[in-house]
Image 1 (cartoon, rainbow, N blue to C red):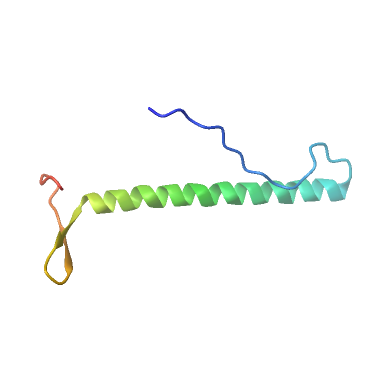
Image 2 (image 1 turned 90 degrees about the vertical axis):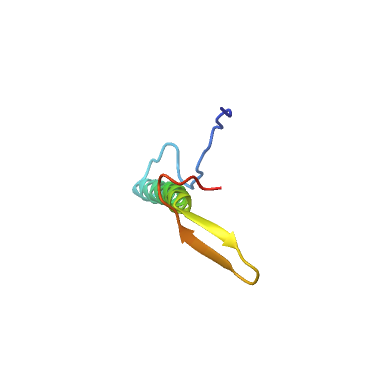
Length: 78
């Protein structure tokens, strides 16, 4: 198993907001960070879904074109 990395999402804000404007900016920064995290989660889920879909299909190379055929779950894909 590979070693995991420490990943961060950066945003603009105040570590210790003192005024209403600073708090508003901090909240907006956090919302932006949450949106970025949600986007990353969606991309990863889409990749997993695509992998599952591709497990059920095989591509055969013919003379002029590629054809995609659905495989049965018991059939091993190459």
